[in-house]
Image (cartoon, rainbow, N blue to C red; front, side, top):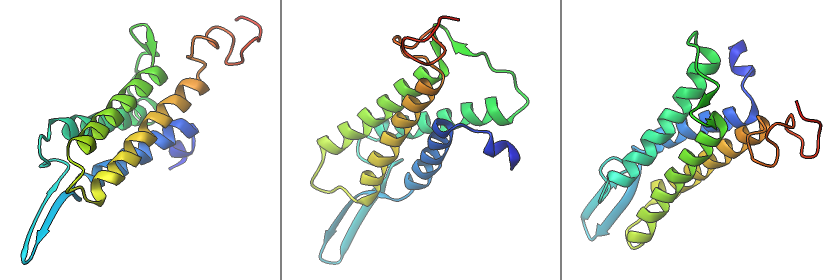
Length: 154
């Protein structure tokens, strides 16, 4: 439990949003009620489920990377190619949010509360990635300055 307290704010946002998104993926994203007939689909079964499944899996992968690198005994590289993990999380969270927005725009007639919660969770994933990138000074304006624009170079 003490290691969970060591997570930065951005990492906590990513993990919390991914957990809520995973739980939300089993709630109704689409539903139709006609008289006595009720039909609903969750994030895994939703019409054209490819986009929602990818968004959910991106959230799970983001949380897994944070938890394994910070709480596990596995040595993860500081960067993934030329990008730091904060930028990777920002991009992955942005893609997940974009995919859920596309799902919502494709069918706004029968959406249920699960889809809206999915929108909030994926937006939180992107914000968590932004926060991690900002905390680590990975944006081009802050790169090499220790995280403060205009600060001394390291």
